[in-house]
Length: 363
Image (cartoon, rainbow, N blue to C red; front, side):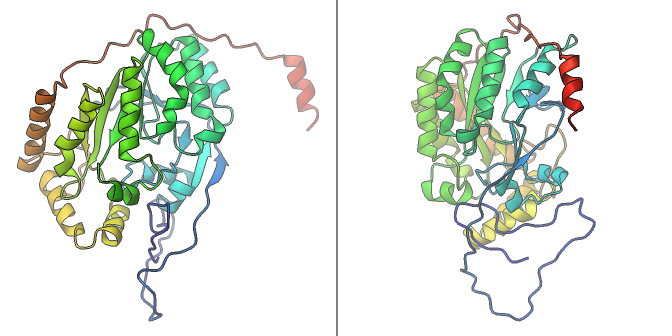
């Protein structure tokens, strides 16, 4: 399939997902094709998600939480490197353009969340919000789904950790400030590059890097525990900015930091290579060569404990650079511990059996 640069979109085409019973392969049939051509813009489509739960559980030993909520499946930010793209295959959709243009959401997410939190066997532990896809992506501005979830967690005094690259989170500052006063929230803002042109092409619908720094400053000034997440760190493309990003975050008032090496699971690998060949000609092989050096000869290693940082001399050098920079900038202040003792399960109304029966009789 031909790949095009589409304004406001990260993926250049729609490759078949790995569960499809057939795969299409691009072939040159001799027709002339302008390599600089751009196809018409692709609009965003909303799909109703009928999942019966909103809390997802995991047993991954290399992440600091065992449960999360993702208000949306798919992300309009369109980041070319997004590790979550392969998850769209579970919907029978492509990890390419479909991932950023066909978004699934749960209209009844608040009701379902209240039921889950009210379950007698539910045990309160910190919950991660918007980890797979950004809860404050552009569509949230009109749906308000993430705000509703945040309001529910605040009412129940349930601790939550947040990762975002959107300035829209400042809309919910009123809720976040109240939760922070009770040690119920912390926010990490991810920054990939300070190069405005590169960010625009690599993360077409996300907030600019400078805007994200202003978000960190606003959150920190409001007393909300914040962290900067340098992610993903792309070798030969953005890794040289590590110290500059940490310095900028420190200037914004943040004193906690982390980083994640570029991850390329499943369909993300060919999609990101395609993006590199379109947007950074001649750089693709250099990037992938360095990735192989940090993953034991493979371009991606999904093993727990290795997938986020890599191994070998190059990976160790990045780790040392990070340690030196964070020590120099004072990034050694731990975030306040979450308080799970305040949790109050929501009350869930008992269904009206007679009303339900009457409603069913209408069908």
